[in-house]
Length: 318
Image (cartoon, rainbow, N blue to C red):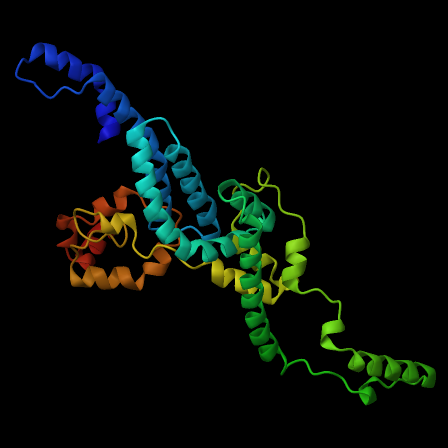
Protein backbone atom coordinates (compact mmCIF):
# COMPACT_ATOMS: atom_id res chain seq x y z
CA UNK A 1 0.00 0.00 0.00
CA UNK A 2 2.81 2.40 0.85
CA UNK A 3 4.62 1.67 -2.43
CA UNK A 4 1.44 2.40 -4.38
CA UNK A 5 0.81 5.64 -2.50
CA UNK A 6 4.32 6.90 -3.30
CA UNK A 7 3.57 6.64 -7.01
CA UNK A 8 0.76 9.20 -6.57
CA UNK A 9 2.78 11.70 -4.56
CA UNK A 10 2.14 14.52 -7.03
CA UNK A 11 -1.51 13.55 -7.32
CA UNK A 12 -2.06 14.03 -3.59
CA UNK A 13 -0.49 17.48 -3.86
CA UNK A 14 -2.88 18.37 -6.68
CA UNK A 15 -5.79 17.03 -4.63
CA UNK A 16 -4.89 19.45 -1.84
CA UNK A 17 -5.12 22.36 -4.28
CA UNK A 18 -8.44 21.20 -5.75
CA UNK A 19 -10.17 20.07 -2.56
CA UNK A 20 -9.93 22.44 0.39
CA UNK A 21 -11.52 19.89 2.71
CA UNK A 22 -8.54 17.58 2.22
CA UNK A 23 -6.54 18.17 5.42
CA UNK A 24 -4.28 15.08 5.67
CA UNK A 25 -1.67 15.79 3.02
CA UNK A 26 1.70 14.37 4.15
CA UNK A 27 4.57 16.81 4.45
CA UNK A 28 7.73 16.54 2.37
CA UNK A 29 9.60 15.00 5.30
CA UNK A 30 6.86 12.39 5.73
CA UNK A 31 6.97 11.56 2.03
CA UNK A 32 10.75 11.14 2.18
CA UNK A 33 10.49 8.98 5.30
CA UNK A 34 7.83 6.86 3.62
CA UNK A 35 10.17 6.37 0.68
CA UNK A 36 12.94 5.20 3.03
CA UNK A 37 10.59 2.86 4.90
CA UNK A 38 9.42 1.39 1.61
CA UNK A 39 13.01 0.79 0.49
CA UNK A 40 13.78 -0.70 3.90
CA UNK A 41 10.84 -3.14 3.91
CA UNK A 42 11.00 -4.21 0.26
CA UNK A 43 13.75 -6.83 0.78
CA UNK A 44 11.80 -8.26 3.72
CA UNK A 45 8.74 -8.66 1.53
CA UNK A 46 10.74 -10.35 -1.22
CA UNK A 47 12.52 -12.76 1.13
CA UNK A 48 9.34 -13.55 3.08
CA UNK A 49 7.52 -14.41 -0.14
CA UNK A 50 10.46 -16.58 -1.13
CA UNK A 51 10.39 -18.41 2.21
CA UNK A 52 6.64 -18.87 2.54
CA UNK A 53 5.56 -19.93 -0.93
CA UNK A 54 3.50 -23.00 -1.66
CA UNK A 55 6.44 -24.52 -3.53
CA UNK A 56 9.10 -24.53 -0.83
CA UNK A 57 12.75 -24.07 -1.79
CA UNK A 58 15.35 -26.46 -0.44
CA UNK A 59 16.95 -25.65 2.91
CA UNK A 60 20.27 -24.52 1.41
CA UNK A 61 18.61 -21.34 0.08
CA UNK A 62 17.58 -20.09 3.51
CA UNK A 63 20.95 -19.27 5.03
CA UNK A 64 22.01 -16.55 2.59
CA UNK A 65 18.55 -14.96 2.63
CA UNK A 66 18.52 -14.75 6.43
CA UNK A 67 22.09 -13.45 6.31
CA UNK A 68 20.92 -10.67 3.97
CA UNK A 69 18.25 -9.69 6.49
CA UNK A 70 20.79 -9.47 9.31
CA UNK A 71 23.13 -7.36 7.18
CA UNK A 72 20.24 -5.07 6.30
CA UNK A 73 19.25 -4.63 9.95
CA UNK A 74 22.86 -3.89 10.90
CA UNK A 75 23.07 -1.26 8.17
CA UNK A 76 19.91 0.59 9.22
CA UNK A 77 20.70 0.23 12.94
CA UNK A 78 23.67 2.55 12.37
CA UNK A 79 22.04 5.01 9.95
CA UNK A 80 21.55 8.74 10.58
CA UNK A 81 17.73 8.70 10.57
CA UNK A 82 16.65 8.27 14.23
CA UNK A 83 13.26 6.77 13.31
CA UNK A 84 14.75 4.17 10.97
CA UNK A 85 17.54 3.49 13.44
CA UNK A 86 15.13 2.79 16.29
CA UNK A 87 12.94 0.62 14.06
CA UNK A 88 15.92 -1.47 12.93
CA UNK A 89 17.11 -1.99 16.51
CA UNK A 90 13.74 -3.29 17.65
CA UNK A 91 13.49 -5.57 14.63
CA UNK A 92 16.98 -6.90 15.25
CA UNK A 93 16.08 -7.91 18.81
CA UNK A 94 13.21 -10.06 17.56
CA UNK A 95 15.27 -11.31 14.64
CA UNK A 96 18.10 -12.49 16.91
CA UNK A 97 15.61 -14.36 19.08
CA UNK A 98 14.51 -16.61 16.23
CA UNK A 99 17.83 -16.66 14.37
CA UNK A 100 19.54 -18.31 17.31
CA UNK A 101 17.09 -21.20 17.06
CA UNK A 102 17.51 -21.86 13.35
CA UNK A 103 21.07 -20.78 12.57
CA UNK A 104 22.59 -24.24 13.00
CA UNK A 105 20.09 -26.00 10.74
CA UNK A 106 20.31 -23.28 8.12
CA UNK A 107 24.10 -23.31 8.22
CA UNK A 108 24.35 -27.08 7.74
CA UNK A 109 22.00 -26.79 4.78
CA UNK A 110 24.28 -24.14 3.29
CA UNK A 111 27.36 -26.32 3.78
CA UNK A 112 25.69 -29.10 1.79
CA UNK A 113 25.23 -26.74 -1.15
CA UNK A 114 28.21 -27.53 -3.44
CA UNK A 115 28.41 -23.83 -4.39
CA UNK A 116 28.76 -22.63 -0.78
CA UNK A 117 30.35 -25.14 1.62
CA UNK A 118 32.39 -23.90 4.59
CA UNK A 119 34.18 -21.14 2.66
CA UNK A 120 31.05 -19.07 2.00
CA UNK A 121 29.75 -19.86 5.48
CA UNK A 122 32.94 -18.52 7.04
CA UNK A 123 32.81 -15.36 4.92
CA UNK A 124 29.15 -14.73 5.80
CA UNK A 125 29.80 -15.12 9.53
CA UNK A 126 32.82 -12.86 9.27
CA UNK A 127 30.66 -10.06 7.85
CA UNK A 128 28.20 -10.00 10.74
CA UNK A 129 30.31 -11.27 13.65
CA UNK A 130 34.06 -11.31 12.89
CA UNK A 131 35.06 -12.08 16.49
CA UNK A 132 33.09 -15.33 16.70
CA UNK A 133 33.08 -16.28 13.02
CA UNK A 134 35.63 -19.09 13.27
CA UNK A 135 33.99 -20.42 16.43
CA UNK A 136 30.59 -20.59 14.73
CA UNK A 137 32.06 -22.40 11.73
CA UNK A 138 33.63 -25.00 14.01
CA UNK A 139 30.30 -25.53 15.79
CA UNK A 140 28.56 -26.12 12.46
CA UNK A 141 31.32 -28.45 11.29
CA UNK A 142 31.26 -30.39 14.56
CA UNK A 143 27.50 -30.90 14.53
CA UNK A 144 27.48 -31.83 10.86
CA UNK A 145 30.20 -34.39 11.52
CA UNK A 146 28.24 -35.81 14.45
CA UNK A 147 25.10 -36.08 12.33
CA UNK A 148 27.07 -37.71 9.54
CA UNK A 149 28.51 -40.31 11.91
CA UNK A 150 25.00 -41.27 12.98
CA UNK A 151 23.99 -41.69 9.36
CA UNK A 152 27.18 -43.62 8.68
CA UNK A 153 26.39 -46.07 11.49
CA UNK A 154 22.94 -46.73 10.04
CA UNK A 155 24.38 -47.02 6.53
CA UNK A 156 26.99 -49.56 7.63
CA UNK A 157 24.49 -51.63 9.62
CA UNK A 158 22.20 -51.88 6.61
CA UNK A 159 24.99 -52.88 4.25
CA UNK A 160 26.91 -55.18 6.60
CA UNK A 161 24.64 -58.12 5.87
CA UNK A 162 25.32 -57.94 2.15
CA UNK A 163 29.12 -57.46 2.31
CA UNK A 164 31.04 -59.70 4.70
CA UNK A 165 34.80 -59.49 5.32
CA UNK A 166 36.66 -62.35 3.56
CA UNK A 167 38.69 -64.78 5.64
CA UNK A 168 42.28 -65.74 4.79
CA UNK A 169 41.03 -69.09 3.46
CA UNK A 170 38.77 -67.33 0.97
CA UNK A 171 41.82 -65.54 -0.46
CA UNK A 172 43.65 -68.74 -1.43
CA UNK A 173 44.95 -69.02 -5.00
CA UNK A 174 46.95 -71.61 -6.91
CA UNK A 175 50.25 -69.79 -6.20
CA UNK A 176 51.79 -70.54 -2.75
CA UNK A 177 53.81 -67.30 -2.83
CA UNK A 178 50.72 -65.23 -3.61
CA UNK A 179 48.78 -67.04 -0.89
CA UNK A 180 51.43 -66.12 1.68
CA UNK A 181 51.36 -62.48 0.57
CA UNK A 182 47.56 -62.37 0.78
CA UNK A 183 47.64 -63.86 4.25
CA UNK A 184 50.26 -61.37 5.45
CA UNK A 185 48.24 -58.51 3.98
CA UNK A 186 45.14 -59.76 5.74
CA UNK A 187 46.95 -59.91 9.07
CA UNK A 188 48.36 -56.40 8.61
CA UNK A 189 44.92 -54.95 7.83
CA UNK A 190 43.44 -56.65 10.87
CA UNK A 191 46.18 -55.30 13.13
CA UNK A 192 45.58 -51.68 12.08
CA UNK A 193 43.68 -49.76 14.74
CA UNK A 194 40.66 -47.82 13.56
CA UNK A 195 42.17 -44.52 14.63
CA UNK A 196 45.31 -45.13 12.59
CA UNK A 197 43.49 -45.60 9.30
CA UNK A 198 44.08 -42.53 7.14
CA UNK A 199 41.13 -43.15 4.87
CA UNK A 200 39.01 -40.02 4.58
CA UNK A 201 35.28 -40.04 5.10
CA UNK A 202 32.82 -38.95 2.45
CA UNK A 203 32.17 -35.76 4.40
CA UNK A 204 35.86 -34.88 4.51
CA UNK A 205 36.25 -35.57 0.80
CA UNK A 206 33.21 -33.41 0.00
CA UNK A 207 34.49 -30.49 2.08
CA UNK A 208 37.94 -30.71 0.49
CA UNK A 209 36.61 -30.87 -3.07
CA UNK A 210 36.53 -27.47 -4.83
CA UNK A 211 33.27 -25.55 -4.82
CA UNK A 212 31.12 -25.30 -7.91
CA UNK A 213 31.28 -21.92 -9.61
CA UNK A 214 28.21 -19.92 -8.57
CA UNK A 215 28.07 -18.05 -11.87
CA UNK A 216 28.12 -21.28 -13.87
CA UNK A 217 25.63 -23.14 -11.66
CA UNK A 218 23.06 -20.48 -10.79
CA UNK A 219 20.06 -22.74 -11.45
CA UNK A 220 21.42 -25.96 -10.00
CA UNK A 221 18.93 -28.32 -8.34
CA UNK A 222 20.72 -29.27 -5.15
CA UNK A 223 18.59 -32.34 -4.45
CA UNK A 224 19.19 -33.52 -8.01
CA UNK A 225 22.92 -32.95 -7.55
CA UNK A 226 23.03 -35.16 -4.46
CA UNK A 227 20.93 -37.78 -6.17
CA UNK A 228 23.49 -37.93 -8.98
CA UNK A 229 26.38 -37.99 -6.49
CA UNK A 230 24.95 -40.84 -4.44
CA UNK A 231 27.42 -43.35 -5.86
CA UNK A 232 30.38 -41.11 -5.01
CA UNK A 233 29.44 -39.82 -1.56
CA UNK A 234 27.25 -42.70 -0.36
CA UNK A 235 25.78 -42.06 3.09
CA UNK A 236 26.55 -38.34 2.86
CA UNK A 237 24.18 -38.08 -0.12
CA UNK A 238 21.39 -39.65 1.97
CA UNK A 239 22.09 -37.19 4.77
CA UNK A 240 22.06 -34.24 2.36
CA UNK A 241 18.73 -35.23 0.79
CA UNK A 242 17.09 -35.58 4.21
CA UNK A 243 18.52 -32.34 5.57
CA UNK A 244 17.88 -30.19 2.51
CA UNK A 245 14.27 -31.30 2.23
CA UNK A 246 13.36 -29.95 5.70
CA UNK A 247 10.95 -26.99 5.32
CA UNK A 248 11.81 -24.11 7.65
CA UNK A 249 8.31 -22.62 7.40
CA UNK A 250 5.30 -24.86 7.96
CA UNK A 251 2.52 -22.56 6.70
CA UNK A 252 2.55 -20.93 3.28
CA UNK A 253 1.90 -17.20 3.17
CA UNK A 254 -0.76 -17.79 0.50
CA UNK A 255 -2.60 -19.95 3.03
CA UNK A 256 -2.06 -17.80 6.12
CA UNK A 257 -3.17 -14.51 4.54
CA UNK A 258 -5.81 -15.76 2.10
CA UNK A 259 -9.09 -13.83 2.32
CA UNK A 260 -11.10 -16.54 0.60
CA UNK A 261 -9.96 -19.30 2.92
CA UNK A 262 -7.05 -21.70 3.13
CA UNK A 263 -5.42 -22.12 -0.27
CA UNK A 264 -4.04 -25.64 -0.49
CA UNK A 265 -3.60 -25.46 -4.28
CA UNK A 266 -4.84 -23.25 -7.12
CA UNK A 267 -8.32 -24.70 -6.48
CA UNK A 268 -10.61 -23.04 -3.96
CA UNK A 269 -12.15 -24.92 -1.08
CA UNK A 270 -15.73 -24.64 -2.40
CA UNK A 271 -15.82 -27.97 -4.15
CA UNK A 272 -18.40 -30.70 -4.34
CA UNK A 273 -17.40 -33.91 -2.51
CA UNK A 274 -17.10 -35.90 -5.74
CA UNK A 275 -14.78 -33.27 -7.22
CA UNK A 276 -12.65 -33.18 -4.07
CA UNK A 277 -12.28 -36.94 -4.25
CA UNK A 278 -11.30 -36.78 -7.90
CA UNK A 279 -8.71 -34.05 -7.24
CA UNK A 280 -7.16 -35.92 -4.31
CA UNK A 281 -6.84 -39.08 -6.35
CA UNK A 282 -5.00 -37.23 -9.12
CA UNK A 283 -3.07 -34.84 -6.88
CA UNK A 284 0.39 -36.26 -7.52
CA UNK A 285 -0.21 -36.29 -11.26
CA UNK A 286 -1.50 -32.71 -11.29
CA UNK A 287 1.49 -31.45 -9.33
CA UNK A 288 3.83 -32.92 -11.87
CA UNK A 289 3.41 -29.79 -13.98
CA UNK A 290 5.76 -26.86 -13.42
CA UNK A 291 3.12 -24.19 -12.80
CA UNK A 292 -0.64 -23.81 -12.47
CA UNK A 293 -2.28 -20.76 -13.91
CA UNK A 294 -5.55 -19.11 -13.00
CA UNK A 295 -7.31 -20.70 -15.97
CA UNK A 296 -7.47 -24.00 -14.11
CA UNK A 297 -9.15 -22.37 -11.14
CA UNK A 298 -11.55 -20.51 -13.43
CA UNK A 299 -12.62 -23.81 -14.89
CA UNK A 300 -13.65 -25.08 -11.47
CA UNK A 301 -16.20 -22.35 -10.90
CA UNK A 302 -19.59 -22.93 -9.35
CA UNK A 303 -21.35 -23.47 -12.69
CA UNK A 304 -18.96 -26.17 -13.85
CA UNK A 305 -18.74 -27.81 -10.42
CA UNK A 306 -22.52 -28.21 -10.23
CA UNK A 307 -22.53 -30.12 -13.49
CA UNK A 308 -22.35 -33.89 -13.64
CA UNK A 309 -18.88 -34.83 -14.95
CA UNK A 310 -20.30 -37.75 -16.92
CA UNK A 311 -22.74 -35.44 -18.65
CA UNK A 312 -20.00 -32.96 -19.43
CA UNK A 313 -17.76 -35.68 -20.82
CA UNK A 314 -20.49 -37.11 -23.02
CA UNK A 315 -21.48 -33.70 -24.36
CA UNK A 316 -17.88 -32.84 -25.17
CA UNK A 317 -17.44 -36.14 -26.93
CA UNK A 318 -20.44 -35.37 -29.14
